[in-house]
Image (cartoon, helix red, strand yellow):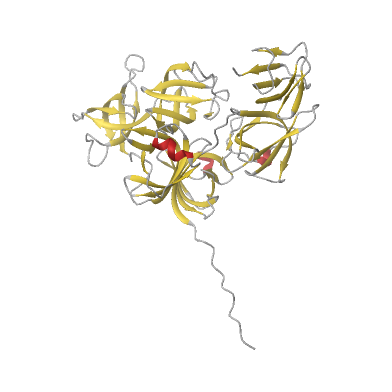
Length: 468
């Protein structure tokens, strides 16, 4: 009897060494760009100081992760995680966007910053009430985010202690005369920098054209808010990657300037082999209408630019608008889920539930200021809120998940059906209407995009807002 050779078993594909840049979306390890990175052997550098674990990090911070990523792109191992803010300084020129109440625009050292109530994470160690609504001129803030079209789109804003007078800014040295220079920031605005006696500077000295981070104080913050007394000038990379990084991935906003596409200052090179998701993204890049899109790009870094192998739009553009569901947690499936699963919302005494998919890209943002929570912390009967979109299959997928301290119902979506003075149905949940229901734009019609609020949980809508 012939001896048959043992079957050939192909080894699993090796993990790919990769440098990944993007905002943190959750913990339980660290989630960045949809990848769950095992951090058990990682080293950390946070604001130029050594940290010991991910307690020094927060959801929303844009980080650089060196490590490996699995073949399916869902898991990896972090060898090193670096975080450094883009700006730290006083808020000025605060203004609510006249076309969108969820956006605030302000400056820090002349740099235009945009905060979005839907996507920016707000933190403060000593002011638990700090958030989008309370952000105001004079606040000393640390900002992380992405530059596009000269604007810093904030993914993370931390309010510093009022007694902290140390500030930071990154830019290019210009006009150095031995003790002073202009620091040209990303949008072209300038800080007037004077070296303090004994200031820490690069070994080769300060030179025009260097890209640096400057740390210091404002001796006269009212009379001369752009005059910084520097205690430290440190050389910085002008983008997120090193010459020898090779395989890289970056998530951020597409920017087009001077005939070149970039993400976060990283130049992008497209060629005939580049894959676009969706395919229409190719045309949008060709006609420049893709500027400002939030995307993920992956490919080879050659020391100067990223040669893009794949680029995809992150999240979704919804014809329906942004969908919001706030209600009671009914079921988390599977039991013991951490970051990936299905969350069912209930609205007693009303019938029905709404199911929302939670995945690796869902941003976990806690209402009480704690960044480290997962699905296992949501107990039946507690309250939560999701901002969501519909995927290609029509299912609801959460882009953001928040635990809520306040108990109320809210659904923002197109109205399925409206029975004047009787009921309004949204995402298949039927709220009653009565004489106490308030309308900001009159009684809506079926198909109108509405926000339905039930503050006392009695199944009767207290307010119905119509998007016009």
